[in-house]
Image (cartoon, rainbow, N blue to C red):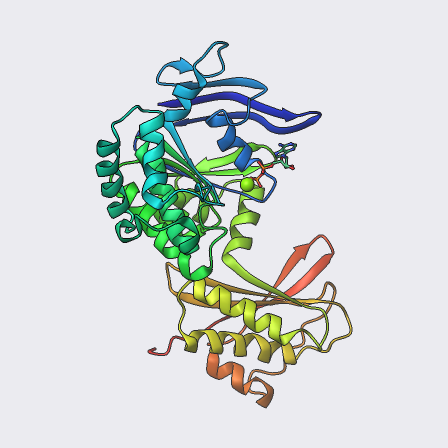
Length: 364
Ligand code: ADP
Ligand code: MG
């Protein structure tokens, strides 16, 4: 359906997209992930010609979008776009927002547009708010109205650019649920997102973008569980882990707690897991004499095994500091986990001792 060849985009001297080759088939759900500045937004914007590519070709239904003289408005109509910032018309009611495109651009009758508009608002759970103004809506409701508006133009594909990034955490899931239901109905979509568990279970394929190109693509399983290339691996691991760096004994414990809480909420972890894992990490941290540099701690929750592991990396060059296994100093740690695995990790700064612990499940 969409074939992208050697797509390139320069802003002046800055090359933002280089040699992008990809295809999107009907019914596919493509998640686009990658660090900020990788070119994800520019890629979507080039696809629907909000930006003019500098080179390459985009072929949709056999038609090259970059051919001179192409009818841009008609092409753009095939592709709906949903932005981070909703982009509703604030002076129009929700229903009018959903009807304006079909009436003005598709030349539909007002009554017909309203009827279809109400159906779409029902679909996204917003029928009750049809006559509200955008200002009266929560962020999640605004975004759902924006999705209904996008659907009203009967697009062949919807491009989402971080649709949940501007939302309060409590509203993320209502928007993701709507996108999930569109996926189930077979809508073709490309979604730039930082919601990794969503990307993992909704998409048919994942594009990992870095440095202006699709650096690696594959099924969610390939990209998240077995990334083949270095930068993908680093990105995927960093996203999955909660990392805290202790620069001194007087670390900011409030920051640690609140960041940790956010991580746990993302994976719907229980209070108990949340507290025990933190206690495990901090108990080990307390054994470390603090004169040789920063200590890194990584918490990793595996959705597959439902295991929480804690890793602690000593400063480069520092020898292992563990007391004997039966030492009183390890009493708390021994209750919380089944022992500490010690290994060494080569890093750019030198060899670092690494301790790894797995939180004990309550029931075994
Ligand atoms: P992402 O969405 O992955 O964070 P973007 O596509 O927004 O990345 O941006 C990629 C790069 O292109 C960044 O370095 C950004 O500064 C640059 N860029 C984006 N839009 C423009 C623009 N209109 N003019 C100049 N540079 C831009
Ligand atoms: Mg972006």
